[in-house]
Amino acid sequence: MPLHSLYIINKAGGLIYQKDYTDGIAKLSSNEYLVLAGTFHSIHVITSKLSPIPGSSGIEVLETDLFKMHCIQTPTGTKFLLVTDPLQANVDALMRKVYEVYADYVMKNPFYTPEMPIRAELFDLNLNKLIKQINA
Amino acid sequence: MTTRTKKQGSWRTVKREEDGCAYRMMGKGKILRRDQIDTQGLDMPNKLDDLIHDLTNMEEDRMDVVLQRKNVPSSFTGQKMALNHTRGLEASLSAFSFLFSEMIQYSQKRVAGVADLEKRLSNFGYRVGMRELELTLWREKNAKRETRVLGILVFINSTLWKSLFGKVADSLQKSNDHDDEYMITDNDPIILKYISTPKELSSFNAGAFLAGIVEAVLDGCHFAARVTAHSTASDQFPSCMTLLIKFDKSVMQREKAFEGK
Image 1: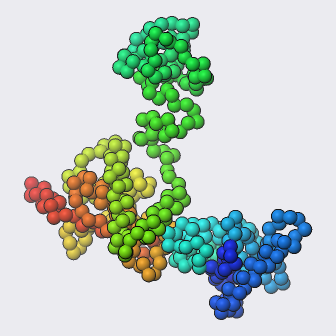
Image 2: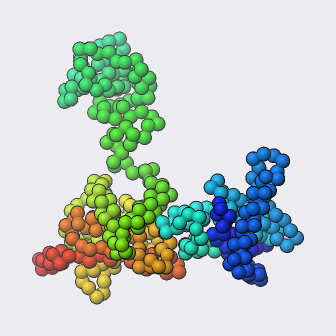
């Protein structure tokens, strides 16, 4: 029951981080990843507008036979997308941990410019450590 | 030390001779301080009366802490207690990390190159180190003035590191090639915990700040030296850092004179 991939989307809908964690996932070109992120961002906005209850957040889970996609939006508008196996348990807690690693190793890094693609060695390192525990 | 002047109901009013302050006492040992009042007009404002309930068995020679009420941190009341009281006064790592991150970003906008940036951070650290030395020695129970190179290095390696980070540094080594060079290594320096240096700045190490602190401490103890920070990262310790300490000629000459004795 592994975790397949992680996407981080900034508040403007741009993809700032993408990583696959299991083998056998089709690789896309970097442009296609950007389009994917932008499309999801739009769907997220549309779903929140579609809801009959005013002030609803956007789409949170998308479930299929083969995978499940979870999304959380932080108070600043950054979105974390986790693609997991449909049977993966405790995704909420995992999502919190990913957010925590992001807050620590991206936001406290003096060389990171907000809303720009994430290139931080320690972020990769600690994220891999976290996900290795889940996928083990 | 104190003279009793007047009795008013259940109150006794006392005056301390050194500073002319008058105090009000209730029963045995319960004291309330009132600054610089005339002993002639001895009435206390009623709003202060509820303070009395917070006071317990205060001794007369501890009058300086009387005004410290419950639930008020000692740092707010400006009492002497704050300085040697270290337990529970750890700073938040997040707050420090954000501040340090801003210091680096601020400096980065105002320098031409990596060497300049490290110099600036080192200067920030120097200001911290001067003060840290004073405070650490003041808090130390058996503090003494170090005269030998090894003594001061051990002081930095253990006492200073403990007061800054709550642990001792991981190693202290002497250089094989040069007699005047020593190295202090920290496998996981807490100030670098969240900092990933980008590839294009690979020669930069934010530990320059720490190098500045150590340089100030050495300077303050009359061991002139140049301290630089170098990354010695490995897979196991991705932010491992070594401080290279190069002592001034005068220090080495003095050390030789000591050895000759």
